[in-house]
Image 1 (spheres, rainbow, N blue to C red):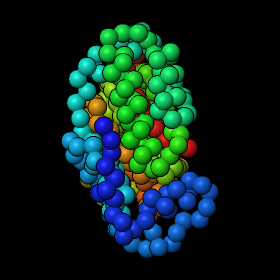
Image 2: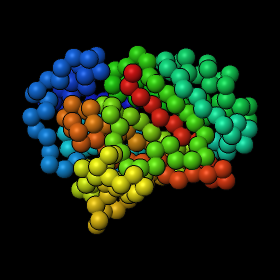
Image 3: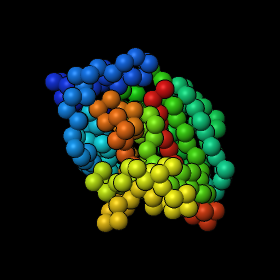
Image 4: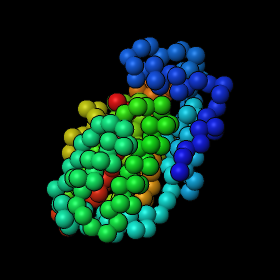
Length: 242
């Protein structure tokens, strides 16, 4: 299975701008001259939707899917390795070899590793990366309970079991109330009083822009970790540009 990148608009070379930023260079000003007043979110049951992240007016692309047998293995991971935290860096072939050694043996392991490898390949293909940063963790508490924006160009997230990540539409955000601008004990700081909290479903694969995406500087997706507990854990995957 491969990701069709033909949907990326050829008139705006955002891919080069992102890669320039990753390499530590300056951003092409021509890539940031048409910043929309509001950013939208696009969803589809087809994987090609992830390429829409290159659209100027899109802040997050969500591939909606069902996990099937992967859910059973994810439950086995929670039981057999309740404190699992994998932090890896490399290509999908390297990831597969390590996960085969580090993940517990249970029905569905092969299919689970193949799925993580697929997402790694898709993410690498999307941004023309030789290596990807991977984190796979069992979570019994919220990693980032307050609404925030990642200080990176882009990130892929997916939840194999448990509650999905929570996020806000651009129109529902009060950005000066995020971080130090908000109340330290108010986990809803940054949410407009008439805004609504959205949530990814289990199995959804979301690619979200961060604050350092060239055409949305300072306007990345506002999101947070959902609640989790020892009785209600999550198996969470994130992929990063490195």
